Length: 122
Image (cartoon, rainbow, N blue to C red; front, side, top):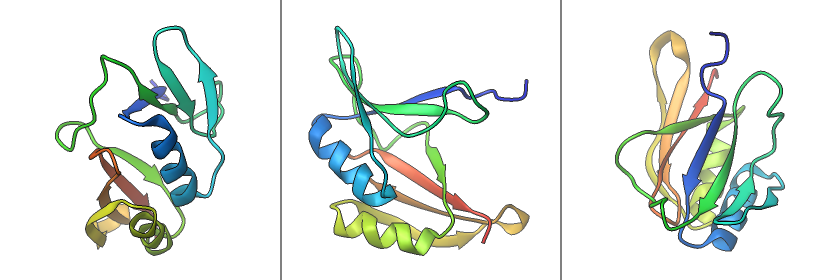
């Protein structure tokens, strides 16, 4: 199993607000997807390539939460990202923290209350 995680979804109560938040934080364009029973907004990535792809999702079945599974986004500079998190309306839970030989992590709450992680090797 070379790529055990292939897709993730981050729940949202307000897809437009969430799209703006994540586009600002990660300085990326997110793509709206037409789905019959839910609203989706996909993060940049190659669903057919290595790594995982994912989307923001607004539906009656998905509820934002700060408890449970945490998705970590890989980044080059955690400090730069966390500055944008706070200015875009998120809440920093803890700053860049070393995790031994595995690099560094940080966590924040997005405007919907989802706990999201950041990881970097430096």
